[in-house]
Length: 339
Image (tube, rainbow, N blue to C red; front, side):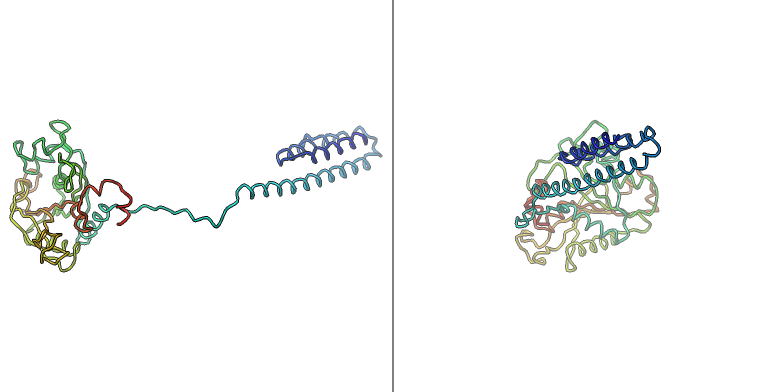
C-alpha cells in the first residue's frame, strides 16, 4: 500500500507540474483529491490494512494530500500570474491616444418649436390632445363644414385612401372628435402630422405639421381669441411683438381672420426677413361656425368658441431664420446640430 501511495503522489506531482492551464490543474485536483479521486479511494481501502498499521498509514496519506494540495496552490498562483501578464499585454491601453467623441443626439428644431408652443398654451390652461393621421372623410371635411363639392376636397390637394378615408389635411378633425364627446367647456391644442398633395420646394412639403387650438364655452367672443393669440405671440417671439388681424375666409369659422405679427428682426420697420413689409403672416383663426357646432352635437345658441391653426414648420423657419423647409427633413447632422 505504501508503494501504491508513493506512486500516486509522484504521478500527481508530475501532472501538476505539467499542467499549463488552470482548467487542466483543476482536473488534476479532482482526479486525485476529489470524492472519487485516487488518493481518496486509497484512504477508503484502509480496512484492508492491519489495525495496528492504520494510524501510521493514515498519517502518510495525509502528508501526501498536504503535499499535493501545496503543489496545486503554488502552481495555481503561478498560472494566474502568467494569465494576468498575458491579459495586460494583449489589452494594453495607450492613454496618449485622443479620446473617442460621444456623439449625443438632441431634439429636432420642429420638436423644440412644438414643445415651446405646448408650454405656452399649457400655461394658459389648455390640454394637449392627439388624433389619427389616417382619418375619415366625415371628420376631415364634412363635420368641418366642408361639403362634397368644396375645392378643398379636390384630389389635387388631398391623399385619398378610398372614398371615405383620407390622410388628414389638417389637425382640425381632432377638434371635431373632441367636440363630439360633449364634455364642455373645451380648451385644447392638437399638434400633429398632416398631409397634402404639394410639390416639394423651399416652402412646401407633402408631409408637414400643424398645431390647432380650440376653445368652446359660454360667452366666448372674438376679443377672447385676439387676447389669447396676442399673449401667444408675445411669449413666442418677444414682449414687443405686435399683432394684426386681417379678414379672411375659412369654411369652419365665421368670422375668420389671418393674424400677422410684427417682424421680430426689424421691429416692424421693414427688412429682408419680412420682405420690407414689417409684418409676417403667422396663422389663421376665427369663431367656430354654428353649423360645425350643430354637426358635433353642441347647441350654438348656448355655446360659442374660437379656433386657430399654425404651421409648426413655419414657426421653426421664422424663429431660427431658416430659409428652406427642406433642410428640416434632410437629416443632415451638420445642419441639425446647430439647434
